[in-house]
Image (cartoon, rainbow, N blue to C red; front, top):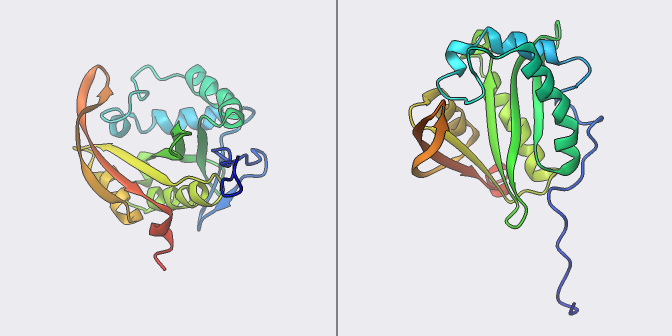
Length: 201
């Protein structure tokens, strides 16, 4: 390696699972816990299936408590491997799961992450998705070292696309048949954020 070359930092950077926690006005954002969050996640999803199912492949009519438990049990390992970072959105008042937000589809070569988010039906229109997603975008850039965060939503998913707009993500185009939900292809609207979008100065 020459004097002008420097070793590239590993991506994503390592962040302690246990201590990662963010707070919003009436919610806490933290990684899903295998110990206590399976039933909370199940209840939130079950109550929101009609809104989630059209756009999320995992939101199926027979979504079960076992499915939720298996998901949260995988969260620490995926985190340690740097393959995905799944957070739950929890009420400060009573600990209920209000939704989820995560970073996945890791491109180590180009330092890119995909951002996904959903909120329980009872939280629609409250700004919770935007607030939670903004905290995770900041985490992606400042803690994990991402250079680009992508937000891919079905063209018809107006609520998700609106959240991306509120985050300041730039719309880049429509990708044909980019999504497959319950066996049906959907066109995806691609938007992205880069670190300068958080601090334009």
